[in-house]
Length: 149
Image (cartoon, rainbow, N blue to C red; front, side, top):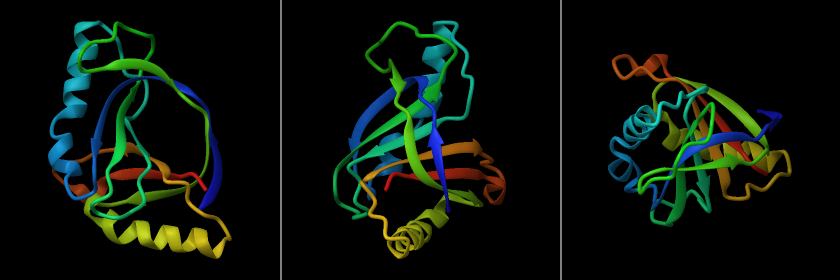
């Protein structure tokens, strides 16, 4: 894990309350729907999507806020589904994961253990940046995990 400062960026965001048990059921096609909304407003995505977790403690049933964010070139009109905001700068420890997202259930405890060994305590705020998504061969997925501590 390496320390990193992530700059702030303008994003289109859809926010929801969920927990780790129902996260994928609740997300569904949200990223695609955000992209459709952007298309109707003629706004281009400029970077990979970011999932921002706030208040997640790693317990399967703890409810937290998840924001599915798409970095954009310009601010558009807020709708019932998306809003536009500046995703704040973020200081974190980062790990790049190559492989399927199903690995996360085992990976996060390892990362949190490493943080503990470094004398750091996770704040419950972290992000996942989806640099490469391959739904046909998930072994090719590349996700950057950013943990605030």
